[in-house]
Length: 111
Image (cartoon, rainbow, N blue to C red; front, side):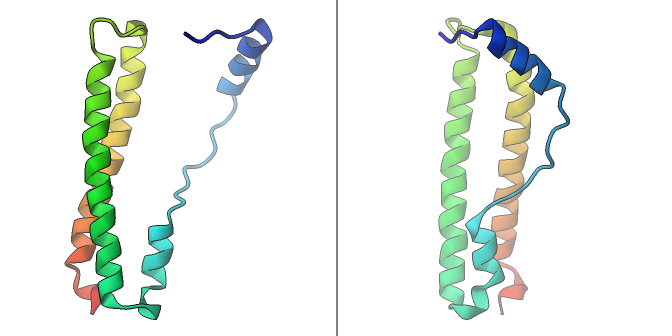
């Protein structure tokens, strides 16, 4: 179980009122795709395939983890609605990336 000090709670309260930073994607696959002409088509396809496999496994793990959030003994049932917001974004982002990976692997842009 976690705890927070009064000073920590005050700092958290202040931080929650700050403007969020813009979303940023930092992912070496994008750089590898950008410079793919310096390697082989097989390297690019292997990177896309391995990444798709990783995302599939990540999605399966996320689904299992989400199931645990709704177990009867979960210690924070009053936060389910907040976790649902995050899980929806996480699943949608993963699904979009998986869809892009499938498209990229069969794209005519690969030459």
